Length: 257
Ligand code: CO8
Image (tube, rainbow, N blue to C red; front, side, top):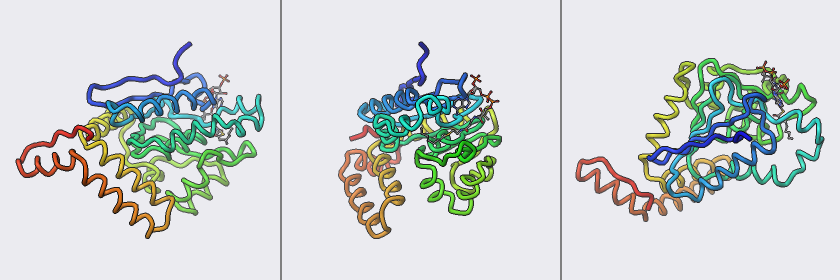
């Protein structure tokens, strides 16, 4: 059986995970989500992984939840504690995830994109929440994250109409970090992950946690949390290395300590 998630590693600490169900347009079956969550759980506790590059290949990112699965299983899919736990493993992944999006990211596929930290999309990529056409609504964070990130006006239009938006709109809304020409997306995402792999891993994790807190807590609590997180970064060997390298006018070498 082919792996639902293709994995490859660079010596520099980039773990590349590719959704690998092209025959079903990378529909997010329970097994595919479980395989992605398992890969991320392993990567979370593996110090040699500094950053993850997540892609769906050249044709599509993902067509969303597996419709055939919930036709067959009904509400049981939604009620599956394992599926919920697997999505939260993706949500809680502490290291940076760079997503490379080509083709379309629909439904759960778009919700997965919203969990990435930096998103490079092809300038002909498309994003949609087609759930309404199935008598549904997004169920893996879309109503919350798309509204918080892109604002009510755009999220309402997308979720109530099911109509796709183009890459330029997704960029303007903040769903996407930058656009690249079709065919150049992977190279750009690789350049970004290679850059992140040179940065201090603990500071990256703390910065990610601090920014995600902005979606969870009131400003005053977020500012307190930021102060606590910078104190933790201050205590690292990598902070010492960073300032020493600055003084010595040489590039820093960060070890994740
Ligand atoms: N689930 C299952 N199979 C799919 C899915 C999907 N989401 N999308 C495509 N496929 C399958 C097709 O059925 C087809 O299979 P087969 O060859 O056996 O007929 C194969 O993939 C190829 O599909 P197409 O021929 O349609 O490929 P195209 O390239 O012409 O079109 C599209 C691609 C535009 C993506 C089109 O397939 C499409 O519109 N797919 C459905 C998109 C969609 O509605 N996504 C939302 C799903 S719902 C969701 O994400 C959240 C639900 C709420 C949570 C539920 C929790 C359980």
